[in-house]
Image 1 (cartoon, helix red, strand yellow):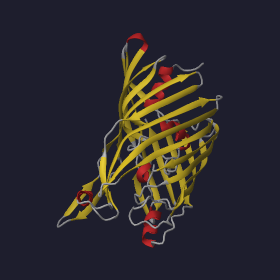
Image 2: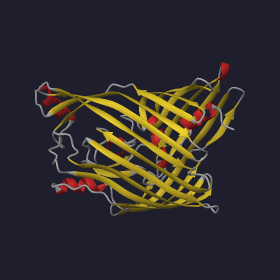
Image 3: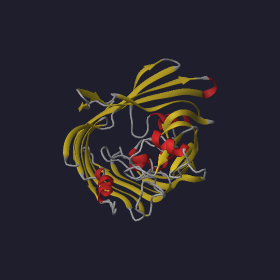
Length: 402
């Protein structure tokens, strides 16, 4: 028997993917749940071994029964840093500096009805994530080639493909087909110059003085949509698109427009948390959608993510993941940071892991990453900077889910 739209919609926008929650209050109208996990790990990469936070978070979900079959709901989620991160800096005195313990991940409010669908407003997972989330189950080295964590592995807030800021989203389903459409309603602008060593204030001054190398960029609304088809109990097919525009004004008065576009499809077999075999893969094509590892906008690229796992009855879950994002050479829009037109950008890596699912909410794990990337450049210093964050590594950790 199929779940009601209300149940599936609340699961999709509040506690998915692969999250659980504990009900801490319920009366005849209201319910409150708490969810999230604490993940701490020891990682060895880039020549160092360190205890680090594993994207730990805590969230609160609230639902309220309304009239005529409607429900209202909201979710608030914060990332937390349970392991601490204090540094000593010297600036005429020794000073201890700590990163914030809490930071915002999600925050939105919505209404849902079995017939009329779901409407949500706020910072939330984008429709594009419906297409590709099924390969994003590695704990340490998750997918960085599906166009979700854009702008050098950030959270996808800027263009609405990850945890999008200021997003309005509508969802509904008809039989085995469900869909999501969204608009990201925001106004943002910034200044950029053909240099990697200049402040935005100095760049703005050059633009005001008529320097063509200085650019004023507006990146405002984005739009996206995704469709999911549950072909069988195990086989799921997805497809989607997301689009925005950069309006660029050069210091000498010239203007141009660049389209931020990503589209693609995915396929999933099984459920990652169920016993037995699981497989997922997706492919995407993108233009002006992401940046390389030193912040230069990538003109066009294609990406593939894949993940295969098998969960045994004893709780052991080995998996392997292969990911590639290939922009080839001549991928940087000119003029930009004096880029060499022959620079190569190919992010490519394999992750192998073993999870021990002690129970549904407690997992011990070990994961290793082998890098096969190619960031060839005539500028060897630049090449080294590009490669730094793509090193091999190994990590062991514990994830405790509420």
